[in-house]
View: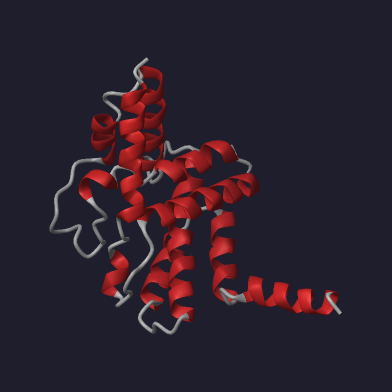
Length: 198
């Protein structure tokens, strides 16, 4: 097995660390998160949502982690641009990306992309629905974080992402994320740390 093809794919996925999420620029965010940063938290959220939904958390997390890898080839097209830009299906891009990989590995990765992309279809797996919800909730969380930094333009992102969530766990998580401040985890930790260090 020639691991150079695996290394090539690994280098390609690294492009996501340098690829900014394009939609945030529309809200005036400079130096916004990268696609890789987004995908990391999607994977974490997909795992958590899947556990609470009774789905396979490992599978859901893998779907979330890989779901945007096709963007190495086409970039991150914001929703405002999608009516004007034609891009091939993510499955076609993924097939090209994995073409040189060992067959077993290529099949696994292509199946992840295909399963995530099927999330809105009636035959979607529970894991795909959890991954898609994680994608939406992650965007909502990031919008709330930018909002907490003083950007007043993010409510449309928050509202549209909350409306797109379909699982019961995802809906409850989206509502909770809007009820509490993004800084709450740190404020509570700092208060308890100060109390306990006396």
